[in-house]
Length: 234
Image (cartoon, rainbow, N blue to C red; front, side, top):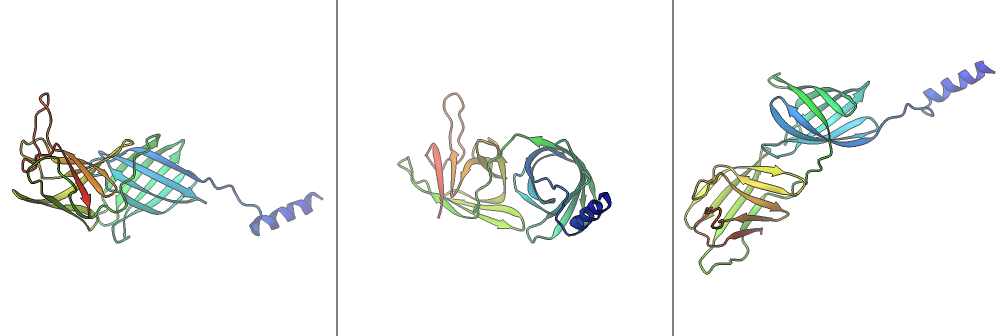
């Protein structure tokens, strides 16, 4: 009887009726790749890993694909805007902690990976950021004509700003949190060098505080008299 039970168990195993349990999960992770702070989201479905991550100082998502976990060992690949594999992450995944190595597949450069499960639920970026933005209405009597073109080029966001006084262009970065996302126009310090121009980013809209108050005086774009500049995607 024991012999028959063993044979039947082997038969079921090889015919797929008995399968080892595969864990499905989705977690956010926070930590470092090299010296850089990163936030990562990983999804496991039937032992296949996919997800995204972004560097805190840039905020632009990088896709992860073709991942797997075997004996607490995770491997997955980073892809570029053309979906080409550009880097490989190899790490142990145990008790919510990722420890391993990021490796550039072209230069072979390696960086340590140290991440752990985080309760942070950062707000996703709008799906369609690229486009033409202009002032929707104006609070002041004067002219407030500001146009910004945002383009997505080779995995990066670029801007071209045009007003009656200036034309500027450069790269865009994002600051991301649970409360919202901010867009930063690199190389556009404004009129009183308050750091790069920054605004609150929502779907199809950018809101910029243009000047402060008596306790914190500053002006960002003096050609516009509005305290709050609302740019709407056309």
